[in-house]
Structures are given as C-alpha cells and as structure tokens.
Length: 253
Image 1 (cartoon, one colour):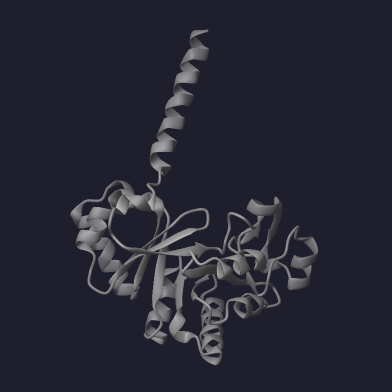
Image 2: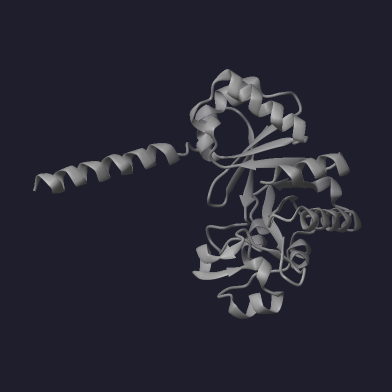
C-alpha cells in the first residue's frame, strides 16, 4: 500500500511538473496590446490542418487576417502543404514525406495532402500569407524551395503580402540576405529562455535574431509568460508573433 501511495505521489508530481512546464497563457494576457489574428495551418480546428478545406475556411472566415501553412518537398520534388516530416502524428504511418513520390503519398494518405499551387490558388490575393519552409535538413533543397516560392508570388503579384518563416536559422539567414524585401520569421517552441529569462539571456537571444536577419520572432504561446521581458528588450524592427498547436497565431502590433 505504501509503495502504491509513493508511486501515485511521484506520478502526481510528474503530471504537475509537465503541466507547469507546458502551460501556455492565452493572448488575453497582453491586455490592451493590439494584435493581428491569423489561421495557423488554416482553420485547423474545424478541419484537418493544412488541407484545402482548412485553407478555404480560413479565407472565408473574416476573423482570420492572415493564413499560415507549411511546405516541403516530396521525393519527386512536388511541393506539398504538410507540417510534419512524417505521417506518424496525424496518420500513424511510419513514412517520411521526403521518401515518397506525390502519387505514393496520395495513395497511402488517409486524407488529402494538397499541393502548394492548389493552396495558393485558393488564397490568391484575398489575405496575407505566412509560408513556412519546413526544412528536411537539406539546405540546397530549402534554398531551391524558397527561390521557387519567391518567383511564384512575384508572378502572382502578391509578393508584398507574404511572410516567410522557418525553424532553420540557415533558411532564415538565406531569405534575409537573398530577399531583404521579404519579411522573414524564426520559429521557436520551448527554449531555455522560456524558463530562465534573465536580461543577459534575452539580449543574447535578440542578438542572434538580428545576426540571422529575422524580422519576426515566432514563439509558441508558452513564451507569453515572459512577454514583458521580450517586449521591453525587443530591438526596433523586430516583431513578436505567438502560435499555438491549434488554429491560433497572433502578430503583436
């Protein structure tokens, strides 16, 4: 009995620790600070994320002022709109996007995985767009993918309406140098700064941001707990953006 109680106590402490570590305040913690609400992976509550249905609803729903989606290559260099590098999380299929042709991906997928061009045709010039380059670890491919997107939005006449973003610092730095006119964001989830936001750490963090040339810091909502320090030490010309694992994404104005 005592062993069971001890085990229950340890499990309870672990659950409490995990909850405290992953707790993400809502955007309402900003109070009167203005922000712009966007659709993270489209309208991803009512629909499967990054599908054409999610994108179409995000276009039609006036509450979303911009739309974010993720792109990456298939094995045969088709550009698909999909967040994860594998099908594990959403479909419990242990296959990587990069090892499948688009036809193979379509054949085994349980739902639609759209092509980049199809999603862009839906959005058009209706709203601003945040396009994330989902790096597969090959910088040459990431650069090729970025160049294609920039050429495409130029041809569509909507280059002024896009933000590029990536979790890869190399991709962010490339976009900043090759296309300085295109705003670019560096994406973060949970980092040491999230829990140890000393002034020196925040300043070093922003120094790295400026060095890579990012215009936006795109952080998970967990980091709203340190918003005051982030806002106080934020360099001029760098904007804050917060995202969640649902449809919410906010650019702080």
